[in-house]
Image (cartoon, rainbow, N blue to C red; front, side):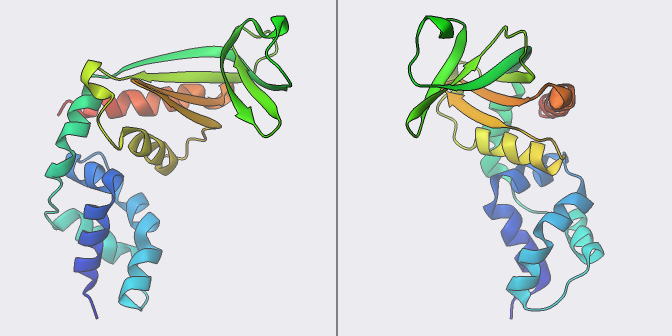
Length: 189
């Protein structure tokens, strides 16, 4: 039967988000412990207290060098926020859809995301990666999981080359921007 310490180390090393958070110190250890507790217990086949996992996370030196490129790329990203977006379904893209930001096929319909909508209650948070950022794997996954751990709700996620577009309700857009701003500032360390 594996030791709890070894299981926690393996879980962190195998998950890009956990590896970056622990390696950079950008982690809330209790939240992370809650997130992985069930996996740890399943692997060791017994109950494990949150405090035990927190202690392992804070005391163990877990190698996370494999994610330095991702953190370096993220440290050079730009953030922007736009309000008054709206999503709606249409059969075809016609003249009434002239102000759309992007569209995608949704079964037999087309979902369009429009901007400058007077009734729009969505916001678009754009993470623009540096020129060399389009070929760096795992950044979208990392950002989405990071926001999830911090309780931020994203409605839609799109990745277009060097842009990661996060669509959220306007009421949480400021919270998401704050979380991402802190992440990018702390990634400079």
